[in-house]
Image (tube, rainbow, N blue to C red; front, side, top):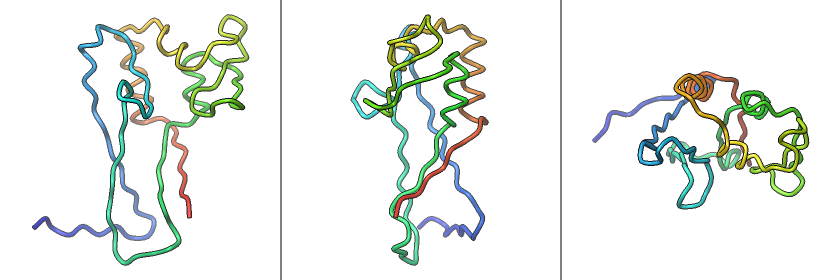
Length: 128
């Protein structure tokens, strides 16, 4: 049996997922819930039971993600997970997924993006 670990008040847990997309020949794989998307989900059990929390998570801040891809304004009215770009004008009307898929990935931009995903500002949430 695995050794019991304790997570005390004000501690945090971090889960890191690693994806091998070398078979995609340089094309981006966007996160999501379809079989062609990248997903990272961790299930953690805790004791004692509390009714105060149903689920918690975190993600890279939306602002940091949009800044990386050069987006100024997006419309999340139709799809909060894949918003439509409003500005800059050159991207207007495209979905966020289209921007990611058409991005000119280089070794440097990949490294910068991985650094941003690993160490960039996070947005956390919990539902009750």
